[in-house]
Length: 524
Image (tube, rainbow, N blue to C red; front, top):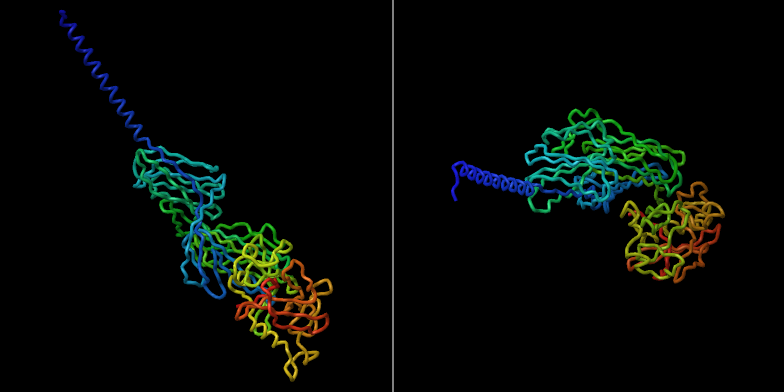
């Protein structure tokens, strides 16, 4: 076939056109494939807020610690004292007032509260801005970011009171510092580097940490009745700081002078009064928490001093209790031992004259009444041990020994020449009587032969509350009292009997292993 010159040129042009078209299509396909490879998704798991719980051993005879709780005795007056129990959760850098012990910590993660506002900001490994997004948390929320494969720095900032700080994220990470005018914003923070890889499961697990100090105080007067509180104070508290997004540090330069922060109580009268949570800017200094407390008309500021570490929440419970009773060379607890099975807490009866619970020897939980717990067992009555040691402050009280009971008996027994008490120096210095009139329990006052009237809380009074042996019914209430003692070979009991108006009789008596008796603790 013959083609003209013009036809040949046209044919060659078509060939060139199709060749160029194919090259263009191929290039576009390669570019598209390349873009798909580089679009890598990072999934963010908002795991929650991490709190490091302090677990330490006892630090002194007056401040003892167990399972994240520290307890300290604070004097109030001659009649009352206060057990300050402090639970600390937060930073691993937890200090202890007056102790060189280094705390061991274990992290617990709690879910974010629904409605928490937070921002996730992404920066290059060199700190250059890449992107950021803000969210309001709902359960199961898992934000995602589409990024090119590379090394990134992820920063998350949140506010526990749902008010995010105003931050310009669109700049170099090292340049982002914002002023915090007060600690009322519960700032939480997280930072982590992540190598985003093509074809990998790129997952970022976010565990936020609180940055400011929080103090919550509960005044517990259930053991003595109603009390009143007024607005308290906490110091230090600085008015303003600067927060660095790059590393989460707080700069107190130019923060001004520390002031007292007001600790408010929504309810100011009752038996269990809880304050509103108070956020503070403390610089990790030694702090002072002061609450004015009124007990039976007497008002005093109750002060607790301790290090207030950044990022730590302090839950402080001030339990008011009557002071111990001194007699026979020992200090007996102000009331009989109680055990609350619903809370697992141990305490003393609210009055020297009130009955306590009944315990089997060598078991830490009280006898269960009217359910067939007529003999001790580990299911109903717990492990072996001394239940007195479980009253706050832990290891501050213990069971009296048989030797100490004999010392008590000797202290109220007259010598051949008579005792230095009245009206009868040749009879025991005791009195069997009602604690406060016929509607109260009959029992024995130790250290007096006359009724102490309004001073009945200051004398050791052991009630004739009976005991239980192989039964759920006690026929000895009002005629006999038994109290658990530790002996050199096991356990025994202090037995007291008598009728109203007499000095009665006290002795050491053997104890059946199936007998449940009351407990009056003694200070270590």
